[in-house]
Image (cartoon, rainbow, N blue to C red; front, side, top):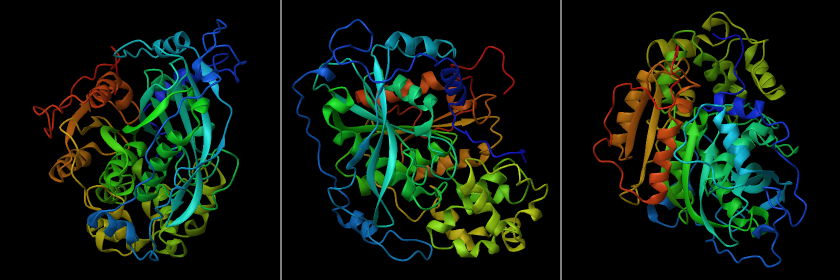
Length: 495
């Protein structure tokens, strides 16, 4: 087991570190009125006196027999019954932070130092800001935060598609969300500079506006994460045009997520047809995702591996979301039933205090026996909680794709030390059998944090094809490919 739980498991870690390390003096405060992002004194459309009128459909939660069935009874695993809220307040913007501006040439320079080959050079200046918006959790209204990035030099009223960027593991309590990190805002700006509105949700429980959620982030829980992400898209569209560079949001989006965010991307794909029927999901990217949580958890409970701490974080947070937080003695050995939630709520890492050298020092005997006998699924309520948050085992059925262009790319790393790739190869096959159009890419020699970075050119082209409406490639649809050298792999690598 690694000595500490990594605070940043985001698959784009190398890119973020490079951006962060070169960002001094690049990200500015609010511009003076009448000065554009390139600093030449020309007024931009976002400074124009007359704002464009942007239309966007109202939230449409459920509304058909099959979607109503879930919306009226989404509780699982012994959770008290509740119903999804369906009102116009979903996605309402509560607070908007000050924007930060970046010039196109500086964004290009920042990306160049990473060695990334992009499909095309960055063309537009961009801006980012943190917003607070209304969403829901277990049928109750709640507030969450997100970063919104947008081009800042396009004509007023330009309609743009949206991209939701779903982050990797950043922590388990308020203040740990990526909205507080300058590097995340830089990444959002880089993606927005290609001509789209980028939304980066802080998952529920990770607020970055200084306010408190009141409970831990339910780590790797599919339903709350996807719902907050979809409401963040609604919130970005509800900003006044002047608050997003004068551009208008189309009700169309793609997903892009790595690691925990890859899991979240697959959950957005699963729940969007139920929860956000007014939005058109075009497909997207899921990299190094723990799609089969049940199999990944059983492996991590049989042998002490890096993923064993991920299981600790899952069992130390998500059971509270299901009302089982008082029963952690059934899964943790003493003193961890109380100490693990305390540690997760006290910082953005599990901490150096948690360093068991044997599985028996961390987990309860009954859980370990169930894992050894491959019967965690029958170890209730824990088996239900794990299975319901895995894409291959959840009881929430997948609904069909809307177009011939629709699909996602599923990326793994051949040498992934955290998410066990053989398990996720099987997940790919299972998700294909469920009807999800998938393309497989396994980066040869790539570890967990490298796979997305090494595949970035392929992923951006895949996203552009979905936005352009190009037909999903039938020759590679649901074909499990052998590991291959991804385009951005360094010349000399050690995996």
